Length: 350
Image 1 (spheres, rainbow, N blue to C red):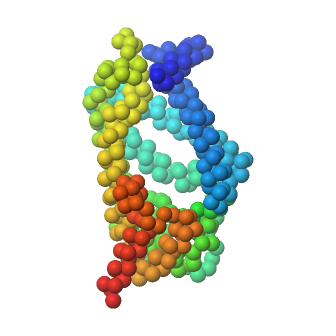
Image 2 (cartoon, rainbow, N blue to C red; image 1 turned 120 degrees about the vertical axis):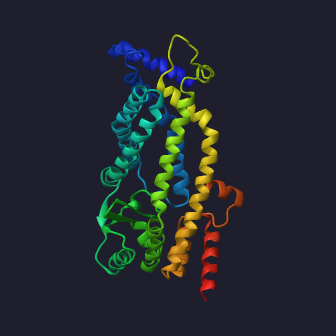
Image 3 (cartoon, helix red, strand yellow; image 1 turned 90 degrees about the vertical axis):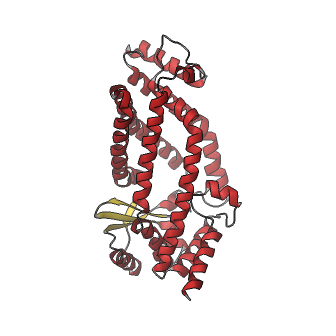
């Protein structure tokens, strides 16, 4: 199989080049193995990504990315994967080996700390490596956004515009930050596609997620999911039958921990993940309707509807996709369903 072949080659190269054996230096050999599989994955996926970006996206008028920017993004992503992913994997494997029978508890705590760390550095350190963030210029929109934040007691400290247009004409807005240091980012494409009052209504929806506790609940669910996954992994960590089925059949040769993890998540956990992902999708759709109702409560229903229609048209979104397909795959309800729900709320208000 592919994994046994890559592991054998990585172990052989590590021993011949650095004198690292897979028994005494498993974590170091693992990092070489992951580098090899990552590079292979990039190379094999590159043709499809190039076609998607420079053919499909360009055909529909979305792609603004140059070949140079595309290559630069790939290099930056690979470097960040090595710099951040390498130490993360090394610590994860160290904890699994050190933690004994209940290692999943220590892994759970570690992944929680790492999640908070990444949520902190990604917006302020990593994302600026790929895009430029500039303060929103003074004007009515900026004043209205800060007024909305004050009304909802959202501790907004900074308001940025991101140059998303250098890669795509798709538009978006998002929020980030901890405690009393919250920030909002608007894509420059969003400012071009909708009016200021529609942007305000869209932000009313996004702030609704925060006010209704959706952001915190999603984070908590993610942590519970991670804990459950590693607990289940601990139950089959020593299952030789699983590893033997995928080519790791040497009794005298322990299966590398990273291989055990990868096989577990790709086989035993995969059907569980499908079910849990579907439940999370349903939960996300319920939250979207809830945020729409929140925006309606702010008196922004009409502007939110018109703003969502414009964005959907600009992004060539599927207005009315197959109901079964969208229920399983779409974390956001189709636009027609959202519009109908808001129209019903408007009727009840009258």
